[in-house]
Length: 378
View 1 (cartoon, rainbow, N blue to C red):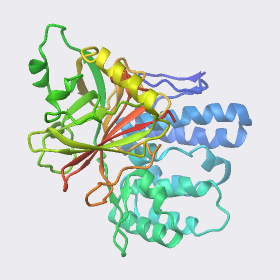
View 2: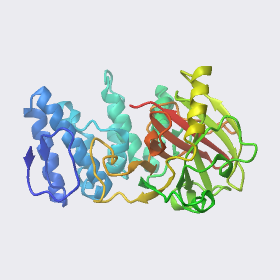
View 3: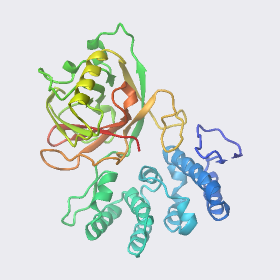
View 4: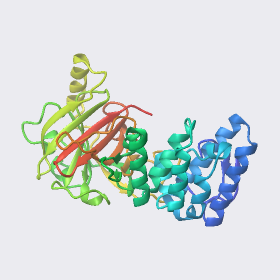
């Protein structure tokens, strides 16, 4: 691995390159190194370098995005092999390009009008969406409506109301890592409930009696006041739960001002059958008092490990509160007002083993509804 002075918890997944990013000059040197490698590295080695470059910029976006600001205009003008080296995910662009100038918006819009873009279009669209300024949100809505690309931006977490109105992000840029820690086995459920973000509560603590039959498992409860950037709600807590299923599903729950689910509706269930449901009900009953704990929210700083576009190599970290949704499944609309719901968190099922894959929590602040969603691995 090409390596210089390093003092950061960055674990590049390609294993070819590690450079310091402690100053603006370091980031410029990394950018120039990437441009050079794009033109000189072979296909296989080049892909490993590209993954390392992406991990570096993921780290930069998390800890020091201000160092990228002088590079915004250069990044949106990259073409060919050099552009390929900067084909990042939307979630990575979001923290690198946020607040970029109107020049960047105009240039991306011009590029998106060119024919025969192929897969390049998606990355240009992601860059445009990441900027997030009023100019960018208006341009995104115009582009989406004109080119029937609403679904592309919806998967990133944007509500497009139509009628010439700007796109609306349905997520908060503020994010923190979710670290699980076990609680003492002697701690009562009542005492555990007083923790900010308890894991593994009895269902009677999160739903009104009788507990809706579709709610079989509790992953985690979030104290919404501790998550920056969420919309105001009449309820102060929301619960990530599961039906008796290991398929892909979305479970909608009405929630009271006392933070209790009052009714549940299951939609978009896939790959489920009666035997599967019976098995998962039995599993929930068998393990209902196991894996109890709480989540501690950690800032995105140099105490986390950054690798492959996530921080889950950090001990005990299973996902994030805040940030954009993964977009691996169709994002839920509120069953009442039909507006795209607001993303609150995404974790892996490993936070409290039940099923397999990612689990996300969404809110509708206007209609007092919460959606829990299951997705497979990407």
